[in-house]
Image (cartoon, rainbow, N blue to C red; front, side, top):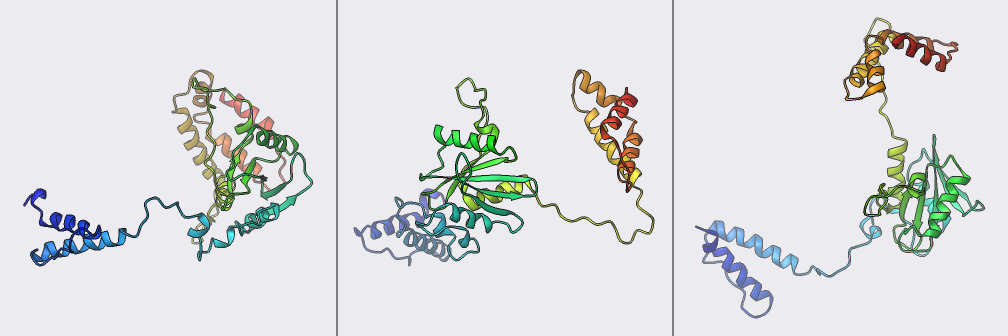
Length: 289
């Protein structure tokens, strides 16, 4: 039987007329058992889809997160200020620290930091984190005032989910353009504040799983051998890449010098040892030459 002769198609068309109120509801009595089961599933789907408004607006993030563990990360409507931003950031990751810098110049911000990660979040009175020339100037000023800042988050105060555009200093610096006149760099996509902060942490301060040596090993750890093995793999990989000129010759000259790196690692790891790494790097370069 071809698709054109499928009796279920005729039933579906008749059922659509029924839903429009221009025909009676079709029966399934004339269908074979297999076709009757297939038709029943299709008609149930049509009934379910009838209540969906194709022109309805998408639900807000707050609605989607209701009754989930992430619901508390979104602010209550109408209470958006820097204290709200700090509250949302404080709930993202217990390892990170969030605090207000209400008197900072060129604009008040929330400082968010963990280990060597330091970010600032700036509120703008808009429904989307559009980086206007004024906002761009503020972001540039924050990077200049605090060189330890590696990201600035522009937070839209009037958005339901505090949509945030994260920016690095290179995103707002003077840059070359493509032939079409657009910047050659691409900004990260705006995200709700909590998700933007979580992504920033994952990129800048990833969590590494703990590692432990095999407790069943009875022999002591041979650190120089492990260092030599790793150095050999790295040198072999880099010397095999299609580098040119001096860089190619430099990596190829290091082939066979794994023990020199292993000895340096062993010296650096010795308790109380004082090693001038600049001088040692120069010595390794001379050995390779």
